[in-house]
Amino acid sequence: MVGGAVLLFLASWLAVLIPQSSAFPKITDVHEATSKCFNFNVPDDDDAHMVFIALPESVEEEVEEWFSAQMDEMTRKGSTNFMKTLPQVSKEIHAKIKDEEYNNKSNVYLKLTVPKRPALRHQMFMWYAPVVIMNVVKASQRGQKKNAPPAGAYSVCFENKNSSTDVRILFDVVMMSDEGQDEELQNKIIKKEHLTPLETNFQDGIKSANTILNEMKYMERREARMRHTAESTNAKIRLFSYISVIVLLGVTWLQRTYLKSYFKKKKLM
Image (cartoon, rainbow, N blue to C red; front, side):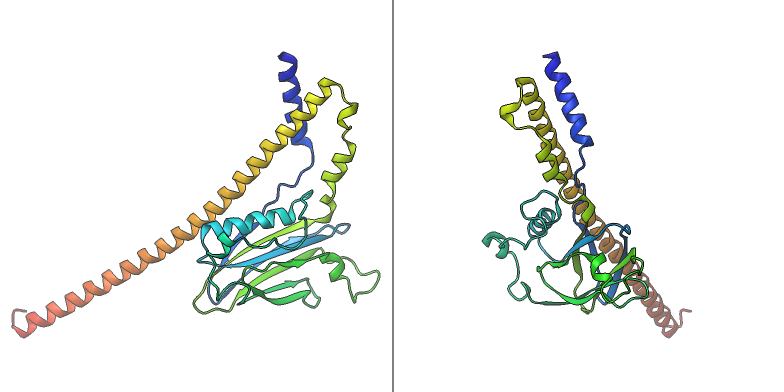
């Protein structure tokens, strides 16, 4: 029993040390007739892929969660759907999406730029359709001199040209230097028929620890999405409070003006 407990502890410890992707899709809101930009740095000896999906701000929670989970599969190293197309939307999810929105023009634009160079990508989002940009560094070096230094810094901007619709953007950046780590790890693992019972228990402990870590990452991703929703709701409530105070002050001023005029007419003032 003691040996099993020590083995499980070592397995958990090794699972934490094993390089794994801890990234999950980022979420940002872009309000009507505004833009929002983010900057990313890519090391000189590395490259990166980028994935983006535009959703209406009024999207249902279940739909957003489905697209977020699918993007996580697209950008997670070792996934069977890594950097591939988005799976077919299920009937249950499709029923919660408005027909006039699905795969239609969003009037929201993506712009990827590097300093002192032409824009790498400038295009309109289609609702619920992922935009995948592969090998960003390699794309930025096209048309440049052979000895030109890598750009290093990249700017991603989302421009919402709608006058009455907010937009929610899911996006993620995947470094190529992290690709294939899961496959390399699997190749290094000894096959089961070559293991002693103790080593077999050790491998089972590593798998259990990996399962726990995956669940923790899922809860972290869900907590981030719920926090984003709460912050958005708080901002709307704050705006409503400001408007209520302004309306209250306006009504008070009108009442005061009316009563003052009334008393003057009655010669009470």
